[in-house]
Image (tube, rainbow, N blue to C red; front, side, top):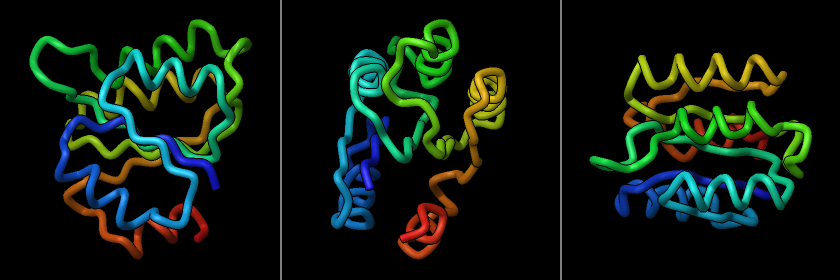
Length: 123
């Protein structure tokens, strides 16, 4: 399984690396890197954070970029997990993804554990 994680917190990325060690995992901390990866490579699952640091583009900018150019992206039908704590951010990303037919689930990071993440991905 190929998984892309957009997350800027080193602590959280360490959890993802531990929980998903047996997958083909790519972790990026910027919207630009996430757009580059998802537009060029096919992922089975993508985990999206919304808040990525003061002054940095956020997860909504990733989903807007995908929505605007979906027909050219290599990633077509992944499961997207919105792991942000922001209800507002999650709703913006969810709306964008629904408009292009992408299946999305909300799972705030503070509610995650290894079993939940792996079960969500069918591992």
